[in-house]
Length: 117
Image (cartoon, rainbow, N blue to C red):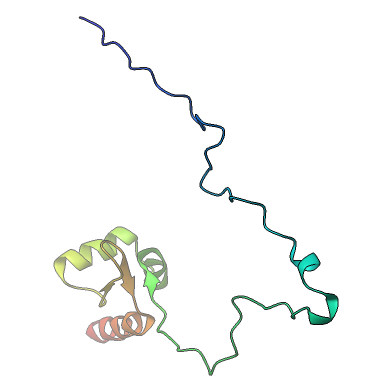
């Protein structure tokens, strides 16, 4: 089997020393403290801070399959089997494959299953 000849590959990094990188600046930035006199210095601005808002929106807690199985006292595979047979507590999709259970739905399922016995 014939071997392919390798092309000359450049070394990683800059090939031209005068070429600027992505984060290099054309000229060094002047020092801000020296540019402004102390009397005219502006107070430092806090980035990313917001004024306090009203109470945050409350979202219902959603348990994953493991937590729901522990809550009900069954195994995760039992919950999976119940989902396939369309029995058991209501569940929701939290993504492509993530299954979630609301605690209220788990309580309702426990109440309904205890009435049937």
